[in-house]
Length: 325
Image (cartoon, rainbow, N blue to C red):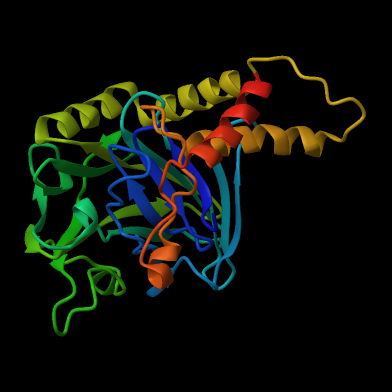
């Protein structure tokens, strides 16, 4: 599976690519309904009149926290004089993906940094008949079609709600996508789009000289509006930080539930053993299906996926998990 740092709770799975872009969004089954169909959810930064998407310009170190399905991602852009530390997780209980971003200013002057998150949903695996809109009740952007809803929100300094956003049309003549709207450091504020819809939100941060600022961003998944609105309320009430910490603690307890002896093998082998168990778990649906591999790359040349529960593959994984306790 060529994707990096998958995060999942058995209902909701997010895959990243090597440029730290979300590429796959599976819900409500791990292995069915890829709501991005492999198209990137771009993540970019604007500062001092310059814009940069995550890509070759960034030094990237993508890994997880020890014994956890919480990521520990380091990003540095020398031309922008910025460092980012990010933690990604899908909550153990709530169907919500949460990202914590800590931005460090490497210059000795105060600066405004703007973070942009673009969403290229293709609900149910296609881009026909989608709707994206700004919801004033939750101060969030929502994508929906039939019985699939994704609510996008953010917070900084305990202030919740999206203040900078745009909903747009993609795959129409003359329009590349909403991500182009963000490259001047501003978003249009367009409140609704339908058909082949995409969206973007922005978070404005004010960084002191050589100082830091942090914020949180999340995507709640559900089958109707009330469900995602409730998940959004839960995130705000419980706080994103506490949800990240509780999920990290849960996976640490899960992977270390059985005592193991590795003899004189180096610590790195122990770490790889635990990491392998955790990554295997991201590819297992809570209804029991053990999926061969959830990623969209093969679609481009094979017109199919490996998102199947094959008896042989499932047996190998089940046997390994059983031996690991």
